[in-house]
Length: 164
Image (tube, rainbow, N blue to C red; front, side, top):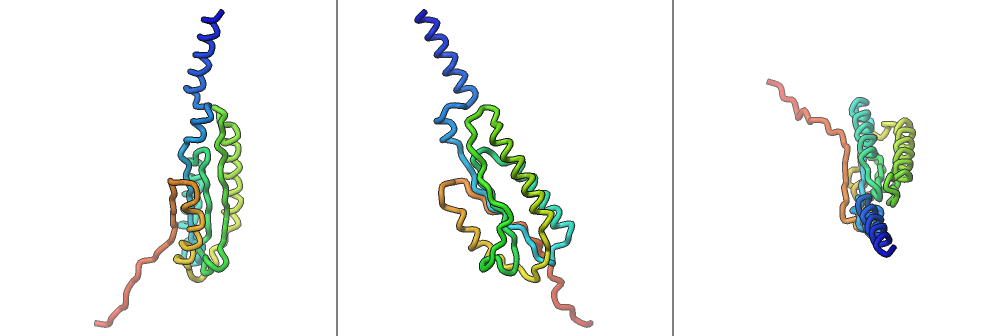
């Protein structure tokens, strides 16, 4: 009987290690803080804006348990009146099938799709420094894996034309 208990305990412990369900594993996962700044100025071509929205959609599909994402709009008032489009931290799901995490990531994706449809490219200028300064509030808190992604459309300058 003692041998059966020992084998059962060994199998249970092995199953926990194999599935990553132990609480030590959940606490030791590396989480990321990701801030995306998306250009909402009217100088952004609509095709570029659609690419930026698609980029964020793909980024959301790659998020892992415990990741935090914030999407900010780059406008003329990025610091004084920031546009926080979406902000969410996904749960660290101890379930080996990650049902809660997958449900929350799907909800985040749906919320992003709804929010991105309502975005308007109406700002005449872009306060890039203001957006960078404002985004710093998400950094240096708990995550040591921090990303800042700036999706900014930049036209090439044609320079000054001279007559020959």
